[in-house]
Length: 97
Image 1 (cartoon, rainbow, N blue to C red):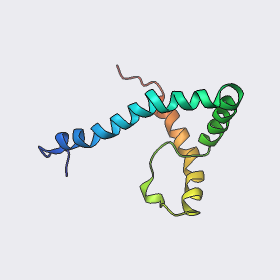
Image 2 (tube, one colour; image 1 turned 30 degrees about the vertical axis):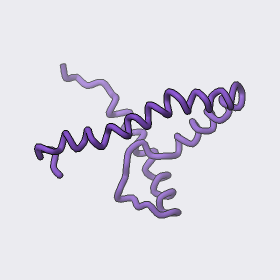
Image 3 (cartoon, rainbow, N blue to C red; image 1 turned 180 degrees about the vertical axis):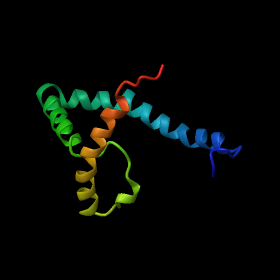
């Protein structure tokens, strides 16, 4: 389906609705419960580990990179630094007004 099709936006809304409800449930109910269980130092330690992991994963989708380990891991390690540099330039101020 193309974005210009008359059914594109209604179909997108139909697909998005259950996903949105699922995300709201996680944010409003499941994550607060998890935070209570983890509490304090353990939560902070897990957060720090997650931040370290994010440094080694791409920030953009690369569908042509493949989905099979170990190729997926290797491609992720190669594309992550490129994505991060590109992200800096995407956020860089432009002279356009």
